[in-house]
Image 1 (tube, one colour):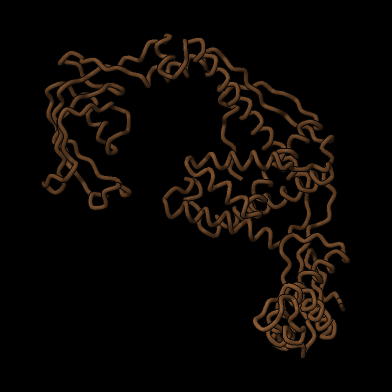
Image 2 (cartoon, one colour):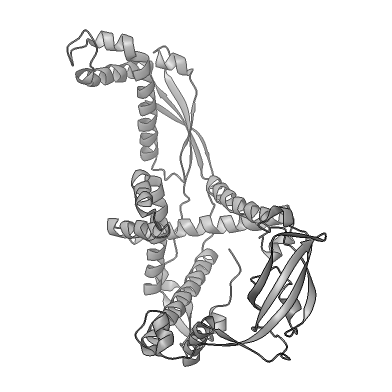
Length: 446
């Protein structure tokens, strides 16, 4: 094998590789000899087909495999000999005529381009100084959660005829909806109970019932949403002839053992205990999430090195595909919606660069600490992912078993969390108590 470096610029390396046709012929002969015992052709005893006959019948096909195997093997050898750390799949371009190579008339020649991972020294986690936001769980937080559960078990009682409906009241109504003066299917109902403020009706409908009382008759004018499930009604203006039969006041369920039993607990104390545990877990998870964000910000600020362009472009492509999907669905962030595509692409390119940089830093730190992912951890991750698809758990597990690349995607977040754990264990961290609102304050997306 002859190898000549053709280019070395930044993180890009290029090599010209040549394997002589004589070497390829030797490889072909060895491959045929290796196959001979397994070849079974009519007219010959099993394993006794002459090598010359195998070459005549299958030589071209076998040589195709030999070429592919040779390119794979020699590419790996070039990478190892030059101590390269590829940042992705190498790019291979055959320089010789493929037909002439596979017929033994020409040497196998190809160009190998490799984008490498940059060389850098990651920060020592012991030198990092971080602040961890913490929040103590208060009794009022538990009381508020209990009150929400009680409110969800609301009972409604008829109010006086003169009572005016207000938000969170229920109204008992008859209504008929019309578009362009014509009633439409599903637009009429008698004796329907509607909780004002529930958002269960067309936007604007419930608001117009605020202040109504029993016996009132009114025309409620609304416009169906553009994404309304009945296509022929989307964006259409409608008038609902509505009669209010009753105004009903709501009463939350009592905070007692009976409420707890509705949720599968023996008594109120048991329900409170679980609510407290859930609330504490939420605070702890949010505290860790904030600390992780602070860690990533610190790592980003302390590292500056060239990034593999292809890695950045691939990351940006993934981000931009999601942005375009959100644009089409009308779900783009309010601030982003005001920006031009040029500005959006520039902003998200920076985010892609940050993600690639942090990915390389975390990988380097994890490698230095010899962080490993166990089969048990991967198995747990597979099970957790499968549980997201009730009824299809077995199919999900089988998918992972047949697709190593999918398993690799599970490995990445586990590895990242382990590196974050390492930093938390070794960095200098100061705890700072804050109010719940500050702990749950949203960070800018990156």
